[in-house]
Each structure stands twice: as structure tokens, then as C-alpha cells.
Image (cartoon, rainbow, N blue to C red; front, side):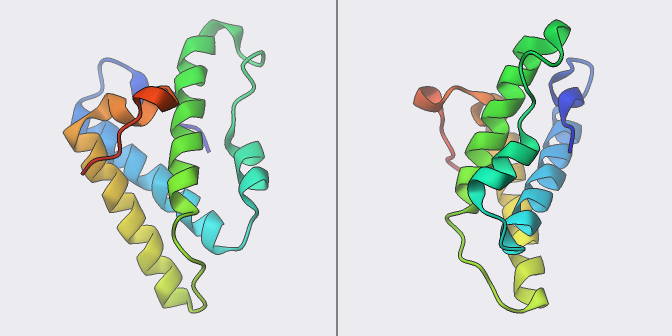
Length: 117
């Protein structure tokens, strides 16, 4: 999953928030599959030494993945496919609402993090 283009200045805010909705939806589907949180983070995180030209962007993307994954694990595991799909859809929309209010909140370092809707 790559959201490297999320921070590009030329993209308008609604497009960025739609992409974050999609990323959050996928994160919740992974969570609902039963994957352990550390395994999910390992799958999502971008090694900062992998792409030295984009180290700052990747740093903020990793913050996004860390924070959103943490929020996803506040949601219980559901048993039916319908419940899992609803959880993923609702979670994606929640992240989109947060983004619409303040796009930078999702990428901020933890001490500056806010998830108010």
C-alpha cells in the first residue's frame, strides 16, 4: 500500500482525503482479517533508509500508518463479512472526516496528534 502521493501540493484536499479513506478502509480490512498489529505495521511502514530522497515524506506517511492502525485496533474483530465490511467502510469515512477537518492532523507526530471529527 503506497500513499506517497498524498502529500503532493498539487492535489486538492478532497482527493487527498478520498485516498486516506481508501487507505484506512484497507487497514481496517487487514485488522478484521485478524492480523496482529505489529505484523500490519511491518507490512505498512516505509523504511526511512529505503528512499533517501523522500525521507521526510515517508516519515509523515509512517506517522499516518501508525496512528490510523492504532485507531483501527480500537475496533473489535467482527465475525461476519457484512460486519467486517461495515467496520471498514465506517472507518474509512471516519478518517476522511478527520482529514477534511484538518489534513495535517493525520500526519503529525504523536504529541501533536488529534483525531477529532
